[in-house]
Image 1 (tube, rainbow, N blue to C red):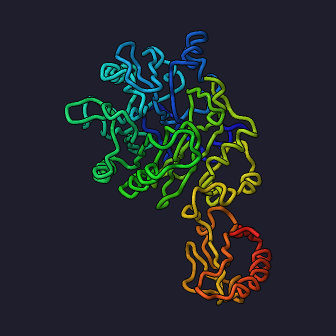
Image 2 (cartoon, helix red, strand yellow; image 1 turned 90 degrees about the vertical axis):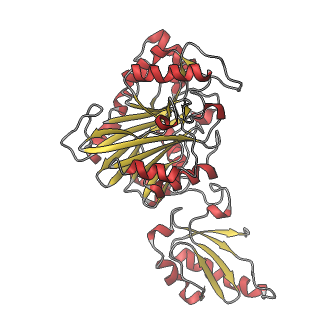
Image 3 (spheres, one colour; image 1 turned 45 degrees about the vertical axis):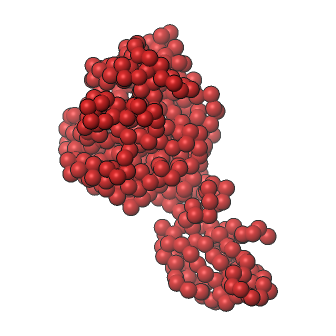
Length: 441
């Protein structure tokens, strides 16, 4: 079954024009990552026309709202700022995004100021002229942090955009144009006020470490702060690669959507996704990820290996494994998806990122750490019952536990821990649990 057919069968999501209300109670947002309209994509437009870059994905992008991060200045003027990479796209090339179906663009990033104030002001004018809504940038701070609302399906879908990236000279201030820098002290109040003026709030964040497989602390702090303040969904970009999905306070975070109309020399940037997000009056009801090959500036549906790579990247925190009813990756069967459990310890940055049960064998029993774990030591006779009683949310990495097998009490007899090890191993095997022993044995 093709991607659109699968989506129609699963969610019956309608398609309608921006700001148009529909009778359906559900709205679909198609969201992608970084967009650059010069370089290889610009060459394709010049040689083959405005429809050429999106020819392979236009049907996959059809939605009530189509969102992307405009990672370029759009101007023919300005002075190049002092940095390694400067992007400047012809204003006419925005027509390619119209042909692709985009409705709203994020401007809060580190490239819209590549040609200074003059280039940025031109970018604002060009985006407006071509009929796009935009977030994260403006003629002053008030406009840069302004909530943009799109009405669809009887809902008010709000968007707000932030960045943590430089240059600082490009940050908007009172009376000064620029992008919306994420001031964490002000952010909760601004997000809360925005949520009061819409039904569903989408927070866009441009930040993180380029080419990193995992979100960094700034990304995590922003996403958690935004959701706590009222955001229903966080969409991330800037790393140029896919990063994991997380559920926080029952709300989804996509830490990085990767590239889209953007060609990078690093091969790991080639596989990306279109996130098709189903919205109802309660929030995000599900996300279908369509794996995409950026294909040198002509994105197309990815092959089966690309779909597997996308799943692995999005599932590094185990959210797709833990919530199969909320997340789907097109091109993979339910059986394939269920089998692709993240590799423990190799897919997390530190022990603090381990979210599954953590067992420590003591001389007097086993300590269980994790969501819903009992307090104190559990005897070996009661270990199976205690693990069976843990809630579903205790297993984001699937049925695997980490086991520390060193005695931690001063003067404890190591032989007691050593003798307990075979019983623990047998219990875990009987329960169908994989064990990651630390230190390895």
